[in-house]
Structures are given as structure tokens and as C-alpha cells.
Image 1: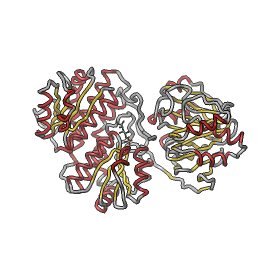
Image 2 (image 1 turned 120 degrees about the horizontal axis):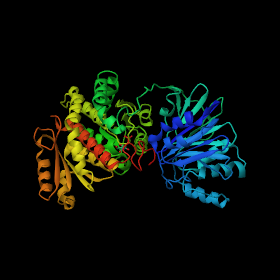
Image 3 (image 1 turned 90 degrees about the vertical axis):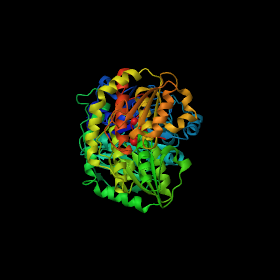
Image 4 (image 1 turned 135 degrees about the vertical axis):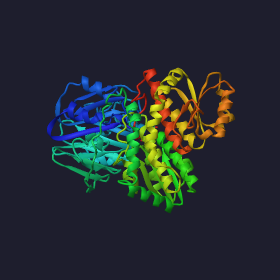
Length: 580
Ligand code: M6R
């Protein structure tokens, strides 16, 4: 994870209003600590969010600086471990997104050569490595970079500066890195969003490339040092409303935006995204097997897709991307459909690379345009949910499920897509007050079980995930039928069990009775009038998943409000997981 921004400019710019303002846009990538370094060797860093850091930073101007917002991988959340890191003399300063896998070996070698390490990070090897190459081996910077690519294993997007030199070095393998080309400056960042208000011209780095930028020009090289020509891409990025408006948190704003965001997506299927959907449908028809890949909430949406398409007779499965290597083998007749809000999730990207290497076809369903996963795909559906600021995925989940419903519809599944947005609105207005009361009952509970079956099983997982990530409550999303094979032993007097019971599903009703008989406090979510504690609009089982999800999201939100937790930025998390 981690977000990085570096700027080299013809003119001086403000650290606060330019560099850190751009960095702030990448805070979703991690918010454990923040730091920057300027050309004159000044390094400032602190733990915590970017806003308080900006507030206490005394503004300065420079024409070259680099900055970093961290999601910790190696070494605790301390000021010492915050990036940037430097050699002893503070003449070589670097920051990094990724993981250097063989950092211990390199560190040992450097320690034997007399270098002292002061942090627990893998990143600290970078300035010492370059110090060794430049000052002990007397290599040129170009040779040192090529040596770095040779010796270092792992993933990295690195920005590096040398004190008092007007040059910015940028290196990339696996972790995302893009160059923004503005009138008087070059901006290197983890994604285009960081500079989308400054320029719409960008060059995306591919793996094992590096760039050297001065105030006047930039040059790209492959890892052997051969100069390469790169295409400048013009992107369009609609300026999103990022404020919370009158809402106290982004999460509730994003939940309540869903009538509009879902409608925007549904209408796009017959208009601006028709060709993309047609292409994906064609690829599904032509492939022998379909493998959905996703993580977290996106995996839950993909499970619904796999169930729906399997019901239409398509050979389809869904896998958690980080575990797919153990279960899935690909070939030329496989179609991999990656599903990812950010389009940058490293677990998914790694698996796509494995699939592509044996000739599988890659398609994707993403929210963030121009993301790595989208650029990797033969066709990519955009879920058009708009920017999602809260770390917890809500409106993007709903739209992912809507894409699944549309795909299934194209293969014969009967559904009226045009009423979904209205029913989403009804789900929220009918239930919000009831959910606030339920939140009062549940907010002090240590464990909550959520039961589902078939299409509602992914929803059980999804609701449990939200209770964990937002409210820090232990929650288990279970297949109802599995309960009696062990977990039911945990049910005691008053244990809360949320049952997802669409259309009087008999198995779900039995499972609910079984836990009730053992003292559980059951909460039934149903789509039939008078058949549950929370009632969502009438729908079939697949559509029910959308409305039940919204109930779960609202519940986790209102519990979070009562617990006074950091709802939009939960502890230990990041919006985009760009490391394995
Ligand atoms: O960007 P992606 O959709 O690939 O992210 C996948 C997961 O990291 C993400 O869904 C995560 O589980 C959310 N925080 C859940 O709310």
C-alpha cells in the first residue's frame, strides 16, 4: 500500500499547497504515518493522518520534493520508521511503496560494509544501497539503479533524490507508479488521482522501468538502462465532490448516494458501456471456464456472480485472489474476471499475471478508471460508483453486484433492472430508524453471527466483514448449513445471530430455529412483509443480496457511531492493498 508523490518543477512550489495537497489524495492508500523531503536534505515526518501533519508543518518552497503516506509492512508505526529514509549524511533520500523481499540479506551485506541501520523497515536498505554503489564503488547513478534492479527482489515504486541535485529518480516493479506531465512540472505518484487537478497527461510505468527527471525533461529506461519511448496518455477524470456535504462521515454519505450511483450504472449498460458489456458477454461465451478473482468485499460480489452464472449453465467459479494459486490452474480457454474497486489490489494483480502467462484472457470490473487492473484487461466494465472515500466498500459493492445481475440477465436470468434504484431508496428510508435501535442493542456485543445460504451466503460474509472492519466486533459470516457441524457450540443465551432469509427459504428458517432453541437473539432480514425483524423490498434471492447488504452496511455504520470509532479510516486498514 502506501501513497507516494514527488514533484520536480521549473518554479518553486509550496510544500503544503502543492506536494502535501497531492499526497492527501492518496491517503486512502495508508495513513499510519506521513513524511516528505526537500532537495536541500530537509526531512520531516510524523505518525498519523495527513491533515494534522499539514497543519503543523511550516510551509516552505522548493522546486524538488518527495512525500509518502504509509501503511506499515515492516516495522511498527513510529516516526523513525516513517518515510522518507536517508543515508547517514542525509545526502541520499528515498521513499518506497512495496516490499523488498530480500532486504535482510542486503542489509547484512551493507552492515558488513559498515552501514548502520536505524529503522526496522525494508526501505532503509535503499539509501544505503545507493550510498554504497555511488560512494564506495564509485558507480554512476544509472549503473547503481541497474544494479538495484538486479540485486533487489520484491515489489517497489521508489522515489529517490540526491541532496542539492535537480534530479528526481523513479523506479518501478509491480507497485503502481505514474508520471503526470504538467506545464511547468513533472509529478510522480502512485496514481493519477494525485495530480488529476493539475494535468490530464500521464505516462504509466510498466514493471522494471525507471525514469530520470530534471526540471526540463524526463527519460524512461528499462532495467538494463536502454532508453525507451513511452506513450503519453490523456485521461479524463470527472471532478468528484469529495466533501462529506452535510453528513458526519463519508460512509453514510456513500450509502445514501446509492439510488443515484446504482441508477447511473444501470443506465450505462444500454448506453456508454454497452460495447464493453457486449464484449464481456462474448468473452464469457467463448471461454471454457470463467474464474472470478477478488478480495474482501469484491470477492463477496464475485461469489454472487459465480452463483448467478453457474445457474445459467456457465462453468464458473470465484476465488479469493490471495489463495487462488492453491486451487486454480488456468489455460488459454480460461477467462479471468478480476473484480476490484481500486483496480490496484496486489493479490489480484499477481494472480492475473499468473493467468496471463499461460494465455488466459483477462477482463475486469473496476471502479477506478486507468487503474492497473483495468489497463491489464482486454475489456473492463466500470461500476461508475464515483469516488469512494470511506475505506469500507458500500456503494461500490452494490454496483459490483448490479454488474453481476446484468451479466446474468444477458444469459437469460429474469430480472427487472429498472426498479433496483428505487428499491435501494426504499430499503434505506424504511429501515434506517429501526437499524439505529438495533445498533443500540448490538454495539456492546463481543460476537455476532450472520447466517446465509446460496446467494445470501456471500451477504452473510459481507455483513460480518463490515462489523469487523468498522466496529471491531468479532463477527462470522457463515453458511447456515455448516452451523451444526461445530460453530453452533458457541451459541449461548443472548448471542446475536442475523439470519438472511429471502423468500421464506426453508433451510434458513430451520437454521434460525436451531440457534433460537439454544438461546440466540435472532434478527431475521426478510424480503416478505411480516416475515422478519427487518424487511427489505420484495425481490428474488439475487436482488435480495443488494438490499440485505445495505442493511448490513447501515448497521455497521450506526454501531460505529455509537462506539465512536474512526469510521472512514478504521485502524490498521487502507483503501487500496497494493502489497501482498
Ligand atoms: O479495491 P478492491 O476492491 O480490490 O479491494 C478489495 C478489498 O481490500 C476491499 O473490498 C476490502 O475488503 C474493503 N475494505 C471492504 O470494505
